[in-house]
Amino acid sequence: MSLFFHANKAQVDRYKDRNSARIGITRKIVRKWGMTLTEICMIRHGETNWNKEKRIQGNTDIPLNETGKSQAEVCCAAAKQFEPTVLITSPLARAKVTAEIINKDLRLPLHEMKAFVERSYGGAEGMTIEDRNRYFPDREDIPNVETFEDLKQRGLKGLEEVCERYPDERVLIVSHGALINSLLSVISKGELGTGITFLQNTSITKFAHENREWRVIDYNNTDHLAAVNE
Image 1 (spheres, helix red, strand yellow):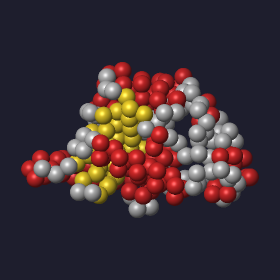
Image 2 (cartoon, one colour):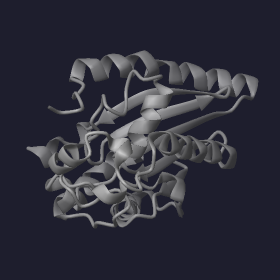
Image 3 (cartoon, helix red, strand yellow):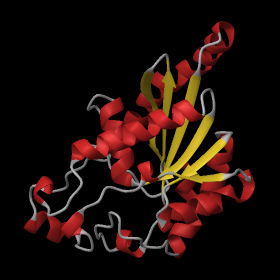
Image 4 (cartoon, rainbow, N blue to C red):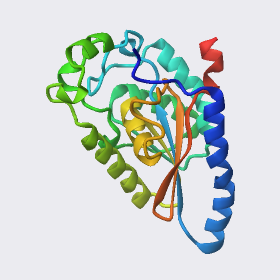
């Protein structure tokens, strides 16, 4: 049985409407009172052959396949609509190449941050998900795995560093499924994220940071992938 449910469109729209409507109002308040609002758009990398084969990648540096490159190409317009002022990527090739393709139109300096690399799955890397579940039903028992707590702390520390470096900016980050999901889990207080939400390749998830608080604006948005998935 899958460990995830796929949020249907109504669920996604309801969550998005509840939060995104506040952003326009918040920007006006921020301008008026001189506060800081940092907006984060996180994109999961494009597809790899290991994604297609349902293999655990973790820190193993697997390149994009042709579908992944096409996904990154069609993601360009959606990324441009966000109007980012900063572009950050995980240093792993599948994320970095996705970012480079997206950046063809943006033409921003590309910054690498190790804080946004994928979770290390230790001895399970290279296994199919089916085999991983069979041999390691408790994911925390995998040899040399990065614990979920460490993953969350690393991701949050990375976001905090981004907010310190780029206050009041619109930051685009290309990263990985487990990392983004861990952040969704923390910021939504368990309503979304790890064990609940499956993030598709090049899906878009957005967070906002204001008055020292985080909130989810959108998650697993794949509207831009309609042409690729037909």
